[in-house]
Length: 223
Image 1 (spheres, rainbow, N blue to C red):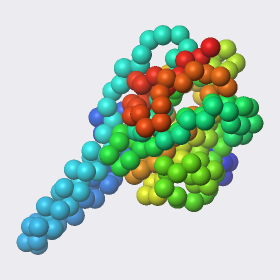
Image 2 (image 1 turned 90 degrees about the vertical axis):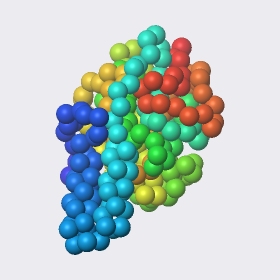
Image 3 (image 1 turned 180 degrees about the vertical axis):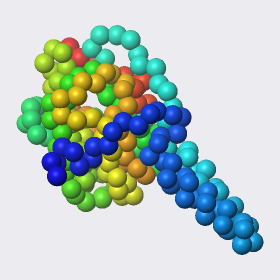
Image 4 (image 1 turned 135 degrees about the horizontal axis):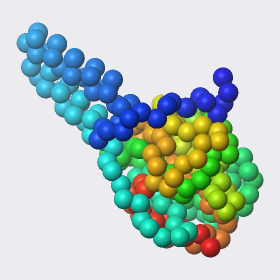
């Protein structure tokens, strides 16, 4: 299969709970019902709580994208774990400014586009499942990279990185697609990371340790 399509899935109709979570929620609820039918009430309650957690994990809230020229918004919810001012972006080799965002199992896992741009190329890599907050996870873990180009010809590289528990990267975009800032473009299940490589010299509006919200938090301003 074309590596650009390994993580691809058609974008489902959006609801408050992401459609990708429905099978997991359904299985947990059916199992809970069977437990209660056999008289194992404690097991049924545990599975009901599990179904509730899975529904919470796959929550898909609406976001309001800030207005303004040259803004770069966070592609993921979570904690900023890495900021590097001069690093070669994967697949392009262009000197870039990198921001890495770690998503714990308690964060929203829907990923959003940081800028309005066209998808020039998507590259999927099989890999390990190290703890996603580690810097080396960017190079060694399973990941899906999107090379983006905005209407001014500026390139960005966006990388979805699987984590210790995450075993499924989903991307709704394909090569050549045009996306708008704040648009949902995919998700990663159960704890993961998203890295963004911006043009070198982009002023960064966050610091390491800050918490950000996908599609709303400003992480950079293009110059």
